[in-house]
Image (cartoon, helix red, strand yellow):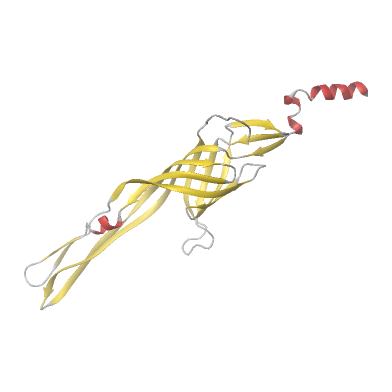
Length: 211
């Protein structure tokens, strides 16, 4: 009996044989390189005059719409409770797009319009800062980023970039995050619909210490 107890105590000096007694805890830490996709619709429209019949101004309108792939890319930095980041995305210019609509009027006194519906104009990609909060289930690495540009963003993690043991706990830092952003449940249009989906990969910086 004494010999069995002695062997057990000796075995526990070897970390690999004592992990079963450790607690595993998932944490998000450091920088992640992220990219998201979602479909957007942008519309442009103008009402134009320039002709009159018997002193009464005449007007014609034109415009159009475009479905396009809204791509956001940048970095997300997790600090334990909050997340900061910078995301760059396409930048639809409403005013410039409206201005592409043209109307040419006939000169026969009938004011017959010939309408050019114009086209969408995008300015160079624009970067915006992001500040959000998040929660993570320490047991399985799932969680939610809240207030993600007005959206809720559930995520799940796969693999791990690094792990370390500290104070009886093995901290696991996920390598990959699969993120789906949804409209909030109280959204006035299309509540609970997934409007963005993307992936974030850890930048694999230097882990200076256990979290």
